[in-house]
Structures are given as C-alpha cells and as structure tokens.
Image 1 (cartoon, rainbow, N blue to C red):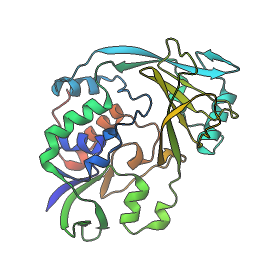
Image 2 (image 1 turned 30 degrees about the vertical axis):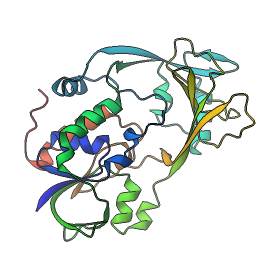
Image 3 (image 1 turned 60 degrees about the horizontal axis):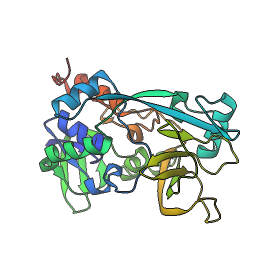
Length: 299
C-alpha cells in the first residue's frame, strides 16, 4: 500500500517533490506547462514561501515589478471601473459577478520572480521527481476499497491520496458524473498575432469591454499573444499566425471541493480560480496534520 498523487502537472510535481513518500500517476507531457505554444503571461507571483523553495531548488529568486493595463474607450489605463470588470467576467465566463481574483484582482503592479517562469520551475521539478512518476492515466477509483485502476490495466492500493487533476475529471473516474457535471468551465482561444497595439510599459493588458472579442494580450517577441473566450475570424485588423484552443480552461463557478479521505491541491483540483502556486505551497504545508508529520522545507 502506497501514497499517491493524481496528476503530473506543476501542482502534482510540487506535491511529489515536497512529499517524498508519495508517487505520482499521470502523463507529464500533457501538462499545460509543457506546451511550446505561448500561452500569454506566465509568472510566478512573489511570496516568502515560494522564494524559499526556489532557493532550495537553486533557481533564480530575483524580483521585478510588472505592470498590468486595462484597455477601454480607445486608450490604456492603470485601473478598471467595476462595471467594466463585470462586463469582462460576463463575456469570459458567462456570469455577471466577478471573482475577486479576476483580471489580476484589478491590480496595476505585481511582484513576480523575474528569471524563473512556471515552465522553468516545472522542468526543474520534473528532472528531480521523474523517477517516481507512473506514466499512466487513472481510469477508475474505488474509494471504499482504496483502489486505483489505470489505463495500462494496473491496480494500485493506496493509503493516502492527493488529487491535482481537474475536479470534474476526478469525479468522472470516481463514477460520479452528476457531481462532475456541476463544475462549469469555458474554452479559451490563444492567437499569435501582429502587434496591433503598443503596450508601452505594460506586460499584459485586459480588454474588458463586452463588444471587444479580445480578452487579454501580452507581448511575445515582436508579436502579441491574444486570448479570447470566442473564436476569432480571419476578418480582423491583424494577422493571425498561430491558433490554439484549450477546452474547459476558464473556471466559471468556484466550488469548494472538500473530502475527508482525499485531499485536493491546485486551482483546477480545488476548482478555485484564485489559487496560485504560492497558495499551493501553503496548502501542501497544511497537509501536515492530515499526514501527521512535519515538513521542514520552510521555517
């Protein structure tokens, strides 16, 4: 009987690194962090806990301040009125009341790690924990018998189980489709396009107005990455070089996922849009009581 982590994305690797006696089940190549398509702004937000971890991993811990902009009424602004935040939330998630964390929580400046991206952290963690990754997909979970069944027809008996996979996927493999259907998410489209707007000193810019099909843009070399909840037609005022659609990427309804026998770690596992990596570290630290042990990686 062993301890297992479901999912080999960045949250699964973090759990695998910090919880030494847990094995990971999942396909690392399917993780979002592993894609070569530029997915817009990808920063690690500063926290004391994350800085301590990066230092332990011998990754750079330099800090920089990035600027976030808001484009409306034909100009760039440092902040966004509440009515436009509501428009943005409605066009991206089909709801009128925004999450507090939506649109970067309406912040204009954010402290981030300047030389360590989520992808760099992911690659570093993968090198360290790859020997404990079981490259299979869990197809069925028997929670009464504490059994995992995989796509390779293997069976694993577990003692403790942590899920970092999306909540609806977890409940589908638990054969609870009605619960799985309560989690709502929308697709997101990414486009590599001409630099049709000068972002100036802003790292990325939101487009909150309802009649603007673009949701957010960020700089990528001499081009822009545009994100949209809608499919952009070719009849645009800029050239589209690359396209990518990711289904079920935008969480539309925050739900508090709680279980006595299984712990959930990460934004999609907890179905909470506000979860960032520094919060995931705190969540792992809070597993101490459940695991009845101490974690020494943080003072």
